Image 1: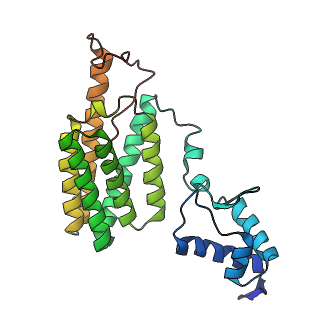
Image 2: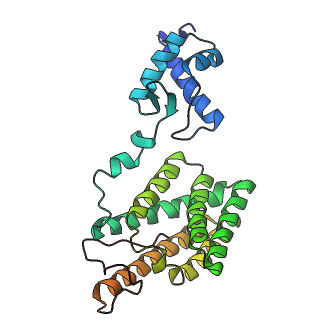
Image 3: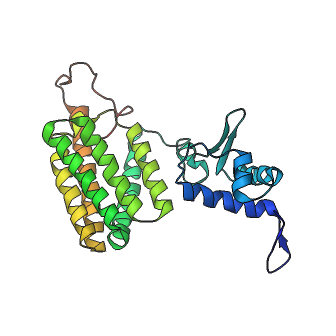
Length: 265
């Protein structure tokens, strides 16, 4: 590949190749952690030399977009350079109530905006994905299947983020939920049968507003969902901290103020 002309001077071939590699990652639908084509394969697909590709990979590695593993090949990097857990986890304390409450505030802002944008931008396929995820969550609640409830809940919020068509919100939603999961020592026994009954109805309300193309109704439904989840969390914490009765599970000590978690919703 030769250097490419631009308005002032020329672009080095490796800069052009780096852009093309990123475009290829998107076109192939590769996700963080997925293995990429080899340098030779990239050179063939881009119509350039392996030397140029190697320089492009160095740039992308420095930017945190590609990860080279010696003897194993190239991989799409984890989102360390874009709101990734690797950066957040360095200061987030999953048993610190202040941190957890701040995380709820952050999630509220996220969920409102992703729902608002999804109401404007969701494709028919994305609408179906949101509704199917809400259905899985409801089925999990109705059958007492905590695994299905949890799976449906996670897929529901991820599907809305996808329908927002905003990659930064998608990453932020995924990472905030990952951090929240770290605090989940209360677990689903504190939410299924309690807030879960409301959660499935709240999911339906969000889904209906998105399908109706009503951004503000969708945002308000999302805010209500997060607010109710937080209220339920606070009640659960208060009950477990201040109840003098033995732990109903019979196999766990009552949590202390320095070791507590939250429902997974």
